[in-house]
Amino acid sequence: MPQQATRIAPSILSADFAQLGAEVAAIDRAGADYIHIDVMDGHFVPNLTIGPGVVGALRKHTKKPFDVHLMISPVDAFVPQFAEAGADIITVHPEAGPHVHRTLQLIRSLGKKAGLSLNPGTPVETALAVLDMVDLVLVMSVNPGFGGQKFIHTQLDKIRILRKAIDAHSAATGRAIDLEVDGGINPETAQLAVDAGADVLVAGTATFQGGPSAYADNIARVRAKPK
Image (cartoon, rainbow, N blue to C red; front, side, top):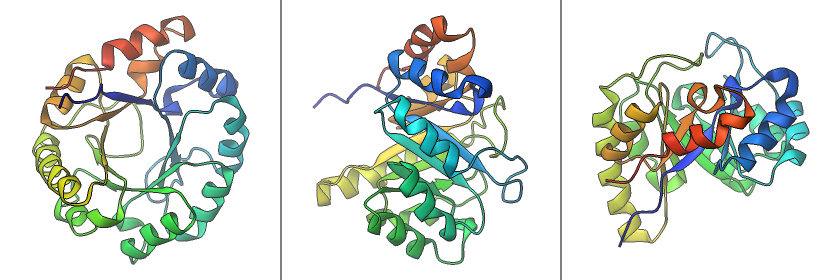
């Protein structure tokens, strides 16, 4: 059975924040599959971005799924707020609270898809232990906090391990799990990530360079072909 086309989740971290609604609408028209929203608190990661109010304001600009990546700690108190604001997928880090299994339960109890993000230094076994609770595993191929960083190639082995585990889990349960990669994605590293097993790519700088008229071509270049 042929693999589906690679899905692209442009990160609005690289968008023009003065025109964020228009930027979200533009990447929707350009062929984005998900809208990736990076939420940073200046504590868990060394940057500060947006809160649930902005997510709620953006919701009217697209019907595409909001892929909300929470880089905040402690995370549990904010999960209901982002769910109410319109998140479709809520991804958390195991280091962002004392009991990641409980956090994933909370996300699912709110009717949202649950994601788990692995930093470059987070062992892959962390995701394997809760695979039955997640709808998405996000492999960070940079240290989280800022856009425009270089791809960390050692994360390709982590992607390969997760691909095998997800395929085995899906074959046993019939349940799909996205394998997403975020950080340093461009046309070259996108193909490396997809060859290793990724099926969703987060692309910020590579998507938003050149302005709205370039977004469709940018997404097409990043949308690597499955191996």
